[in-house]
Every structure is written in C-alpha cells, then in structure tokens.
Length: 605
Image (cartoon, rainbow, N blue to C red; front, side, top):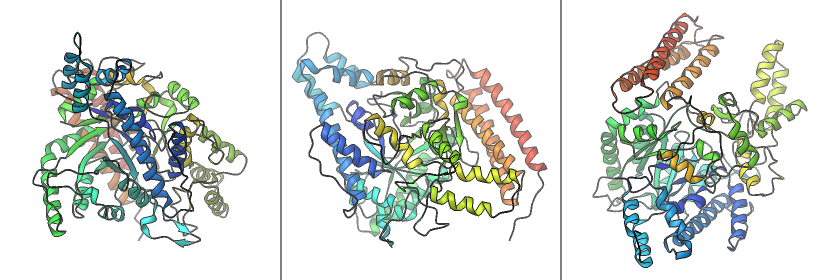
C-alpha cells in the first residue's frame, strides 16, 4: 500500500512554481522552486514578509555574494512559512479540522494513512489522540529546488571577472546548500563539470553511516547513458545521486532536450532492467572515493529512486508507469498550470491556457539558450517582441542578463534575445550579399529569440500585484502539448482526484495515449531535421539522422510488443494504438528512404 502521494509537481518556468511549496507542502506534496532569478525571489520575499509580518531587510546587489544570500533567505522564509502551515494542520482544533481532512482526502485511496485516519474518526473521537497520530504519521511535502546547470553566467564587478564560485549556477547552489532546507536539488539541462566539482565543498551532500543525507541530488535525464555518465562523475567527487528523474525529450513543458530518437517507453524499460546494476556500480565508485577522502562510508545500500515525467494525463497512464516500470513517483506538470491553488499564473495567461488547442502549443526556437522551447502562441511576451520588431527596434533591453552567455561580440557575454546582440547581428547581415528570401530567413532567426529570463518570471509578479516597471508586462509561458486537452481552471482537489482516478478533468475525448503523442512529436521533429538537411547535408548530419530514425523504429517495435502483450491495461485503445504504431513505422521507413536519397556534401576540413 502507498502511504504517500505517488506524484510530484516539477519545476515550471522561472516563476510558475516559485511559491508552490507554500501552497501544497502542508498536504504532503513535493514541488520544485526554480533558482534562476534571485531578483524575483527577493521581490517575493519582501511581499511574503510583509504579508505574514516577518522582519525583512533588503539584500541589495551592493552586498557581497548577494545572489546566494537572496536565495538562502527566500528558501528559509518559504521553509518557515510552510512548516508553520503544516504544524497548524497537525495541531488541529475542532474549528480547524478541515485542513487535516483535506490532507487525508487527497491521498491515494489505497493509502494506509487514509485507512488509519478514517478508523480513528469513526463515531466519537478523542482530539488529542488524532493530534498524536498526525504528529507521528503525517509528513510535509519536500521543498526541492531546480538549477539549470548551463545557465552559469560569469559575473563581473567593474569589468573585473569574479571567481567561478560567483557564477550564476554556482551561487544558486551555494544559496541552497546554506539554507535550512532538508530536501533535494534537481540538476537539469545537462552536465556542468565545474559545478559538479563545486558541490563537493558542501557537507550536507555527504551521507552519514546510515546513508542519510541532509541534502540530496536529483539528476533530470532523458536516457540511461546520460544517467550513468553523470552519476559516475559525481560519485568520483564523493557525491551520490539519490534520484534519476527521467523526462520525455519532447513531450514536456519548457526546454525540450530531444534524445537521439530514444522514446520514453524503451528508456524506462532500460532503467527498470539496469536499476540495481546502476545503483551497485555507482555506489562502488562512491564508496572508494569516500574512503580516499577519509569520510564516513554508509553501511547500507544507498537509496536510489527512479521517477518519470512528461505528457502523462490519465490515471491509467499514471498507474501503468508506476507498476510496469516500477517507478517511485510520476511528475505532473502542465495540467497544474490551471490550478491556482498550486501554481502562480496571472489571470490573462491563465485564460489563454484554458483556450489553448494543439495549434496554439508548438516547439519554438525562441529560447536564447538555442534549445527547442515549448511555447504558447500569442503569449504577451511574443506580442511585445513583435511590436519591437515592427518599430525597427528588435530585441529586449535585457534587464536581468541571466542568459547573457554568448561571447561572440563581448567577453562579458550577451543574450541572443537582447537588443544589443540583435542590432550587431543584423548589422552583420546587412553586409552580406544575400537574396531577399535568404536575408529574411536569417533576419527571422535572429529576431525570433525572446527574453525568457524576464518573461518566465513576470507572471508571478502580475499575479501578486508586484511592480513590473523594470520587467514590463510581457509574459512567456511554456506548457507541454498536454495542455490542449485540459480546458478549465481546476481546484487542487479536482487535479489530485483526476490523478488518482476519482474524477476526470480532461475536456476532450480525442486525447492520444502519452506514448503515441510523444512518438508523433518525435516524428515531426525528425521530419523538420530532414527538411533542414535538404539544403546541405554532410556525413555527420547523415549519421545523426540515420541513427535517430533507427532508434525510433526500435522504439515503435518495442511499443508494438508492449501494447500487444500487456494485460488489463489500455484495453479500450489497444487496437487504435497498434494501428497508429503501424502507420508510424511506415512513415519512418519513408523518412529513412528520404535520408538515403539526399545528396551528400563532403565535410569541410
């Protein structure tokens, strides 16, 4: 029986889950705060300090190590406030018993805690007995944090470059490490060796003799190989990865890190088959390093969780992932954007999400990181961007500079969405002898980039009526394709009842199975890559496309076997899914033939 929740709320954007723990942690729900924007965190700390009458002293950018200190202070405040809510829930009085009932009601129906509580309150009950039981059995949701490892900009004071520990991701890590939280840091967006090495400086990341950690490491990955490489790298620093959080490469919100055609099902299967091998191999490496460092070596096998997220939408999919792949938790992201009790989205954007259809949700090139980005068409930040282009002043003023990582024109870095960068790139373009068509195509690629580090946080300011004079009112939002099938604002109870099959919140009858949806997204992605290659393709690109196609074919074969043999699950859609898979295989065979027929251009030396 499951005692706790079998889902978690992943990080969404910069601001959409920035105060989610304050809303849901008291109900035992895990959620994740983004640490990208310390300016936003400081504004919210001020707002919440005033709201809950907590002493507040501003941490200005004139203070040494202000970014780390802002992050620590915000996390400590959220921890204190969430803990206060949780204690109030447990120390219930007759007048305030609804909160503990809400906690229990939201648990999975098979929960031992739910059964015990319901037995306790049968007939007349002793309030002190329930308080004692609650204090012994109920746990608060984890207040986790997310760091995008590659968003690690160098920082300067008066043109003097600061030491690497003042880089953005390094400072964010330090801010978390020095906070009072006993939770996890999720490392996403790939490997950053310098940052991983820096983590080894903080004692909270090391285990005691019982294998307990004050602070844990979670790696967000999209395939097994990445997990193994990064897990071993960290183990060689004496650091243990407590959870591998597998995310669909493309059927997700935010930045989309496409695999080389590896689909989610086969990836999860590999983790299931090699999970113990992964744990044993990496713990052996870890134990040797801990011995070398003269540190405590745990007497126990260290805990290793495997979780997944990306496109899940029904109780059947949720339960299948948990049971078939033996996962520990499932991430539900995008639908929670329609739950104001859980996430923070301004009213205008919330209404846009309610109305969004498939054609409004697309994989874009707007991110300054150069990674495909799931976007909502006609979001207010894109409308603002277009207005600047129409005025002949493309680009953003770049007030926060978190993604000022491009050093093409300036050693201190520029953001490719900034007005300064786009002006210089267009100036370069003007000096090229291009046809009108080629010029416009290049111009569009330059000006497509949007100011994400501001746009993804502004919604939280608008929702809390905080001044946006510096940021402006433009909002970027990054739902996954799953948003098309939800069309109403939901309560927290609605959403959790939907996850556990006690209610049904999907507004349409034509939602495809999550595996099929991901497959179609990957096929569209591959077709676009082939179209790009038609202009010029070298041996390296050919090898990539062939490998991508073959991996996808293997994935389709896996699904054909899975859906043909799995019993008591997906019975009502099995026939249609198998037909879809057969059609997808034909499409992939045609794409493979197309790749074979493309003329090759030799790789330049």
